[in-house]
Image (cartoon, rainbow, N blue to C red; front, side, top):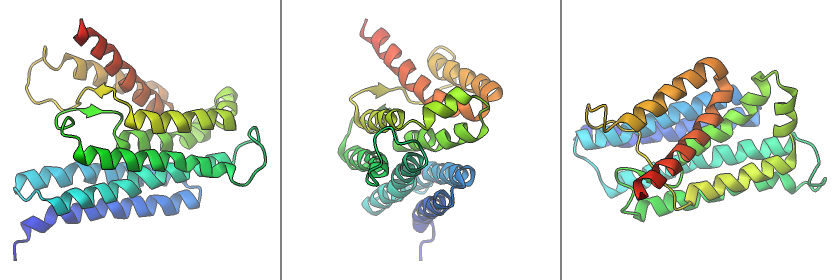
Length: 236
């Protein structure tokens, strides 16, 4: 029995387990543990592909497992988080009990993104549209901003249902938008060729040091905006 060929799939299933655990923590409104579990799942999501390439055991089964695991960890979980944020917010959109279910628009957008990614040959070295793991970290950081921020204005903004609706729709859109995003992988040790990545990482470190949890959604927004600016310069 060739154990090596099963290692990547086992790692993928650990990602799925982390996603399931995250959903349980969200149901208990323990958003910090949910964030950690999603982060851990994303960590394993990176290494399943790494070991598949290392052991040369990439296959269709691994590809499908990876998408299904990501659907739970980076698709269902952020949708459920947004559902709970709608449920715990004000009633700007009304008191209809169906309103919190709008949060699952994120899950629908994630599902479409993952299915499209599997058949899109353009996304081998970079991304078109925001990857689901990055979007998941963005959404799961929002309740942490509410919990750990001392800003009353931030609290009012992130508990307003109109704001949550805008975030939800933008999230589903940016997942599937035809916007090329630069790759974060550094393939060659060249300062010139990796200047954009190094600049981005440096800004991220500064933001995390000074802003802590608030830095997480800002980093994702900064990544998208920096990619758009970079695309404009590449066209010139």
